[in-house]
Image 1 (cartoon, rainbow over the protein chains, first blue to last red):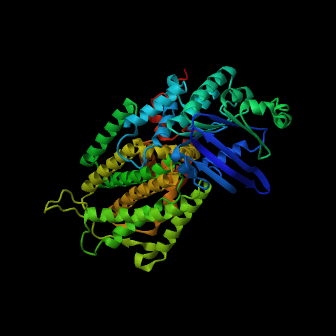
Image 2: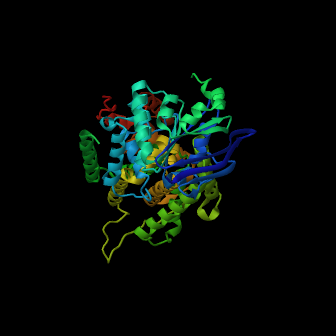
Image 3: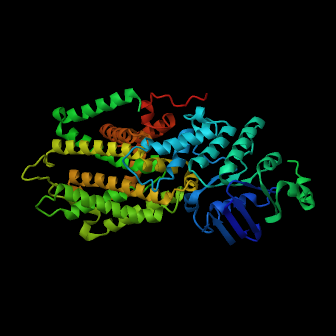
Length: 249
Length: 317
């Protein structure tokens, strides 16, 4: 399995605080790498570094064989990296379809096209329809995003990410705030996506994480506390003390 | 667009086309001015209503294009029609490129302030330049003329002819903007207004799209400036002042931001009321102000709101 994403001694300082401190990890195509840890461990900061939302203070990020640390987010996205946000980040005024269509349109070499109607690009429409279908939103196609339920918005967020046909997926708490039934469907979806993509998953729901992930990294205070298979992590005494034992949120 | 609105649009267009056959010269020229302002307002709406960029300096490309025509016009000779339009619009485009590169790095209230600042810089420069006519401005003695192989399709010295040229250009700009907004470029521009950050995360270099949109809006404002200068036969610094930008913004807001017909309605309403109130009292600005306050209170989405027969909310299930 090829390595799609690799970080080396990644570091992000906010003033005097090291939010991410020397994190090295790898993510392969076809397997899910989950990052867990208590609140404030630096998980979201890590994803922001990988997607280019934040520039690292030190260290290297390599995605699909390219050195990307310091690149602006749109360049990283163009390489084939899709991310979803912890707090839903979609185009509220647009329909579910238009959200995905815009996402798919971003794969045109350039959107500086002024005359032909955007809705006449067949491949883009198909990519958008496909993404909606994979995420179970095909019946909600023409509903404004603002009128979708919370769970549906999370699904739409994932659908938009997929519509860009990414190779690397960065998911920041895709299950946050979901009902049990919605969460179950999402876990199923993530498992399916994990088989075909390289996926880095930040998630609080431990049952889900252990069900999906092939590799786990535990972060505490910006550092990697432990890394390994779910079984190894479960057995790790340090992890139990620092996180699993205390985690009941 | 809903069908009743389409029928209304057609009716308005026919009425406008027939008007010079029956109207007096004064009103023909008045409606010509309204249509020039409508064209100008449409260009601003592209920025304010669609891209979400509230500019208070849109008089800059308008005024510069007007001055460009003045400078190009020899004293006793008509400048070429297409050539002078192209030159005026190029001046507006270059000015918008330079200003856009700087102001588009800001957003929100700061964007409003820096566009205002650049507009005022141009205003004071022109105002204090003797060779540009200073505070009085300058006359354009001969209007541009079009001649193709000895054939003159129209004569801009004739008010009715000028009227039809403006009408044709207004329809052209309206159509151009509609096509533009439906294109991949247009979709990106509208999404910038909705959520620029998300758009960047999808892989769009949003700055470029904003810049191109800013330049396109500036070029259309330049077309309006060329028309205004050619129509009035004079240019003055007031064309560049922030009053001009402010009045234009008012037209867009009054008519309905981000609606195709809004800027046209806004320009027509504001200019028509100005004319009516001026006939009643010299305190006409007070009445106009009251009207604007009332319309913003009761029609927050503008006059175009009245045209919306379409069901607003999408079905939920």
